Length: 379
Ligand code: MG
Image (cartoon, rainbow, N blue to C red; front, side, top):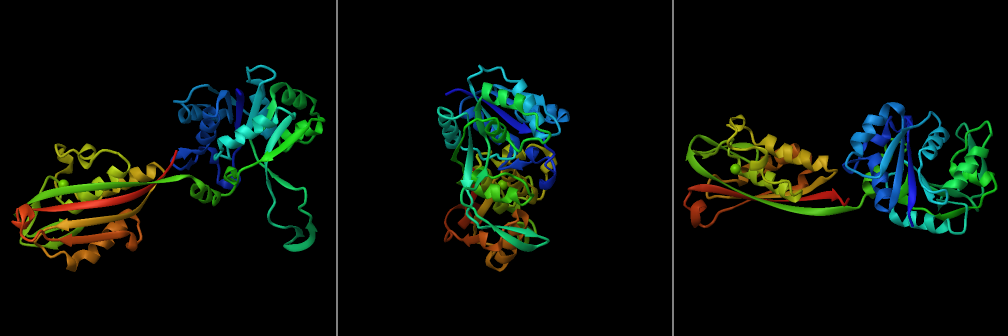
């Protein structure tokens, strides 16, 4: 069934610390989650109602999507909804889903239930049962019990045929603004169906709600591996896993030649399919001559964060006959944990020899391999 969508995103969101519709959730602006959900579910027209000074901003956030238009809203929610309704171009009988941008995790199943309900009702809204018992109180003192039988928690989107919601709003002459569209239609005599809501459709109201919504996002676990080799040459110390280890040789390379951090950087880049260390820090660029490899690792970690992900654990193996790694292993783990902001038990550094075999056994070079697991939002 085709339908139109209206997303109301004109509020100031002061309780969530301001402008919550523009904040990032799982690497994506909050507003974009709802826009994609409605468009992916088949909305053939989407009106996004924003504050008059945010029209450019919404164009940035949704620029690569089709079938949407932005209009300026008003101070009150009802004014914004009216502005959204006025911008519709669909047929009078087409269903319109009116949604709050502050509820980003909109599932297709909720949309389907709303559209089905419109076959026998004038309107529909998703609701959840009230699980906790309810109390009335004044000044932190309980004054009464509120029976929760027959009480429901209302969510959005709320669904109506265009002509029904327009007529109901035209007839709304009360001095008070309505709480939502379901109230407008129900008060004007319409039958509004309650359909099963979704706990993930929670409203982002307080700053701490963002952490809860992040936890509700579907995630996927990614694994990346990295491998690096550097040649031994004359020197007095060697950088390994972010630690300067005294040694009678050093590793030769364009940067500080820290093969451990290079392998680890590649493992993290591999987990998010973001190329390799040479793509991000070309060895031909004189800027990276003698550079500390810390910044390569930090850059890879920042790319993970930018995608709304987090590194779960890392494991590095150094392959060499000398120097002995074990005395420095704890310092290496501490350093990597600090660079990546990980707990120590998520950072492993191991070492092995190759029993005198191969280029590492002959002392020509040192090899390092690494594995990283990363959790990303499954978008
Ligand atoms: Mg290297």
